[in-house]
Length: 258
Image 1 (cartoon, rainbow, N blue to C red):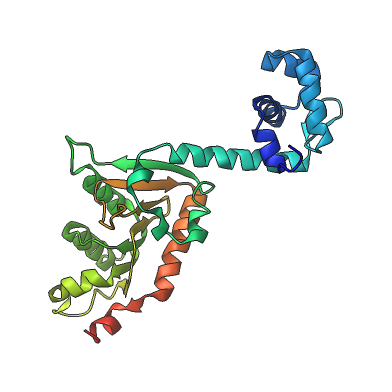
Image 2: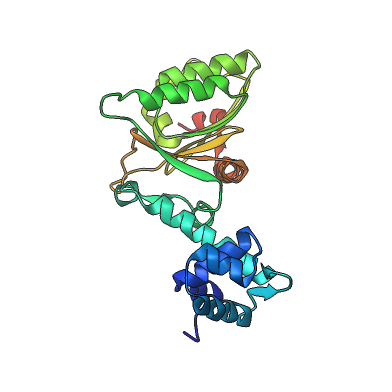
């Protein structure tokens, strides 16, 4: 259709998408494209003519992408990643709106994502996974809506030994409900701890980010975690942490008000 964007124009046709991706992977002649795609020669000619007319490919010794065509392929890949990410019942039961929009927009393009779940026969799987994650980390950023004594002790111990650089944001409701845990003194000096209103929990290490989103009725879900790996995912995790860290109050200052 005349009003379609370039991305929509390509995505609406399986053949246009296939030709563009084939040229992106390996510049080819018209005959090679015909052999690779197993479609009629006339169909390949027509599609190449359409793509060239839109400035997405050009013919030199072989067909190759233009800069515009490469950007379209990148966007198609991003959309495919979104579709793969959304192809799970997790999104029907969880509230992704708690994640600020500018971070939601980066999810699909930020590394590889996978859902980790507690199997019915192994309900402690995620807890053991997190324990190993914390134990192996030398750099840790955490936003906690739920208190896990085992994790807290481990972080304290590793930080006190000087082997872990940790910054922890604790949800204010968690502090209010268990103020006695802080009654014996300030948090350990090697841990930077702040308090804020957190809508979800997260963990960031040098290798991954883990997001624990609430269910649609606002309940923290302890049985499913969205885990992203790669530089883009870690960068997203760092930015999420910085967003809430900058809005948080040092623990000692918060405790002085309650």
